[in-house]
Each structure stands twice: as structure tokens, then as C-alpha cells.
Image 1 (spheres, rainbow, N blue to C red):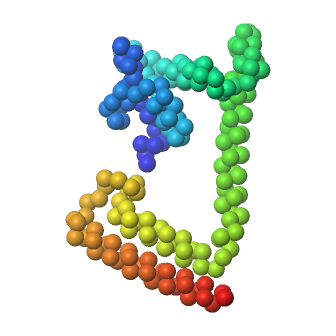
Image 2 (tube, rainbow, N blue to C red; image 1 turned 180 degrees about the vertical axis):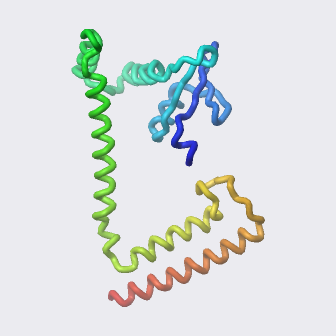
Image 3 (tube, helix red, strand yellow; image 1 turned 180 degrees about the horizontal axis):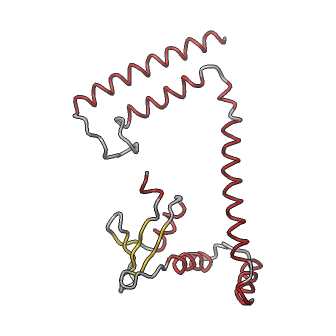
Amino acid sequence: MADQEKPLLIKRYASRRLYNTETSDYVTLEDIAGFIREGREVQIVDLKSGDDLTRQYLLQIIAEHESRGENILPVDVLNDLVRSYMQPGGGVMPQFLQASFDMLRDSQAQMVENISAMNPMSQIPGFDAMKAQQEAFLKAMTGGMPGGWGGSGATSSPTSAKEDSGEDLEAIKRQLSELQDKLSKLK
């Protein structure tokens, strides 16, 4: 999880190939676009000089999508960007865009929070028990590993994992029974 908070470091070699330092393999611009779509911040640096090339490559990703007919930015916005860079002092466009995207992210987060708070399921008696059952089931399915599916943090022996799964299964059965009792009382 801490790895997700710091930017993914991509190194550009003299051959212009891009190297993912976390997975130790080469990546393409489309791979980098995928990381960003998944919510990951990236930093691209030149291996030899140490120069930060992130802006250059992000603009290249946008330009490639535009050249394939994917209209990322309306023409009016592109014109305004060009105009803002032609004005002495660079204009206020970059700060305006940053503030606009910050407000958009905040609004999206607030909307998700409001939808979660207004979730009609949360008003149903037994919802908390059902949610706990779901969490216990997922824990049993993933073997209690941090990071969920395919995690590599398990330190227990296979025997203790089976015992934990058995205990989790019993907890799930108990919670399911309690939930069924509550639902039958509602009828």
C-alpha cells in the first residue's frame, strides 16, 4: 500500500526505452497510461542526466490519443492553452486548470461519500452482520493475506492456514444463521 502512495519510478535509457523500476521490465507509453488510469502517479526520469521527463511523456500520451481520433481536449481548450503560453508570464491557464481538476477530484470524492452514506442497504436491519460476513468470507478466500488475491505476505504454515480457514468458515456460518434469524423476524 505504501508503494501505491509514492510515484512509480520509470527510467528512460539512452536507447529511449522506458524501464519500470518496480517490476524490472520495460514498459510502453500505453502501459504508463494504464498505470495512471488505475490511479497511480508516475515519475519518468532520464537515467543518465536525472532530468525529470514526466511532463514531456504525459503530453506525448495525450498527443498520441488525440492522433488516434480520441478527443481528449476540445479545440477551444487547446487554443486557450496555446494562447496562455504565448502571453508574457505564461498566463494563468496552468493554475486555473490545476484548480479545476482539484475541484473535480474533490467533488467526485464527495459524491462517492454521499452515495455511500445514502446507501439504502445500510438502513436494513442486519446489514452490518451481512457486511461482516462478506469481509470474513473474503478473508477466508484470500487466506487472510494482506493485499488480498495473490498476496505474498503469508507467514503461517499450511496447517495453521487451514485452521484459520475453518475458524473463518464457522464464523461465516454463525453470522449467516444470525442474519437468517433476523430476516425471518422481519417477515
